[in-house]
Length: 279
Length: 88
Image 1 (cartoon, chains in turn red, blue):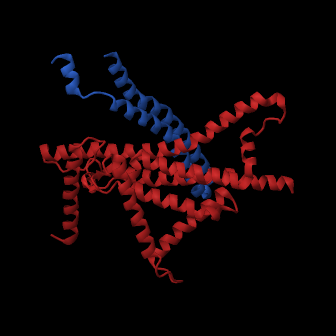
Image 2 (spheres, each protein chain N blue to C red; image 1 turned 180 degrees about the vertical axis):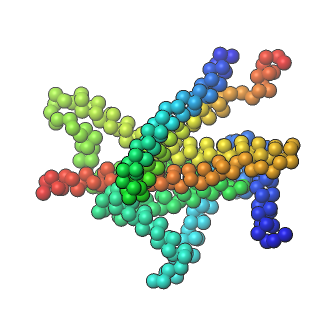
Image 3 (cartoon, rainbow over the protein chains, first blue to last red; image 1 turned 135 degrees about the vertical axis):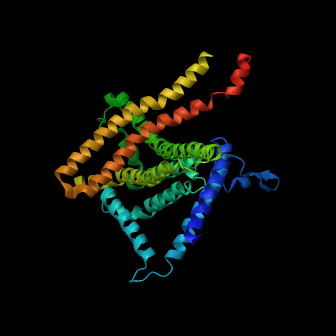
């Protein structure tokens, strides 16, 4: 058997073995390479006992991978770039173009933040598609943490740009007179709810997409395994969904980072407009 | 029993109804994007970005319904327990 065929066959066997582990478990507790962490005791306490904490362990793995890969790939940057360098440069310049497009001239200031969000979320999403790995983003805790970070950053930049006049933009459009106070209060509450809805929707969008994808993969893989065991037909039924999940993973990372850029543009651009009006 | 029936129906219908509205919206978005590309093929790249972004945002509403459906279906008891309850 040629080496390539051996590798393909071996990986299919591995995937089926993993899938049988997956199919025997409930969708909420997929067995994965780090499931054993749930039994590890540090000072008589198991830390990685809940699914959310296992997802945390996976996210640490993703962070480690991104850091190590970046460190190795950017070791010897040259004016005659290697293939990896070309790809990475395309990625960074694409992200930079998006920030310039969405946020305007101040865009590249936020490139590290938005770029990191994109790369980190894309890696986390794609990780789950490898058999035996778990997407950290299939846990609401991880996505909520990311959404809270985005919320805090956006509010911080809002206060930084406008000072405490930032609160004034919540009651935009209401004439500043005592007779309009009830209307002002209502507008303030509605706008506040809108602002609070943003991290909620960010978190649930990413979580729902990735978790639903994983659930579908688990169910289809279970059916494929049953088909293999009962009817001896090795058909990977989850393959079309796997390909769709690759697209969905990347698209959701794009959507998350682009929405962050849009929210930042909302707070950063206003200062430019008011300066233009004043000047 | 009505509670369980309600849970099961809601968990099933939630995604079905949400997918109905979502797919109509996505169809309109895609049709508009295709028309725009047909008018101006060189704008295809930028339009593709906007299309993907718009589709993902519309889809997220269907995903919210899916999350609700998952939460509801996790409240349903296992079939064995229901059979025991019915005395079979």
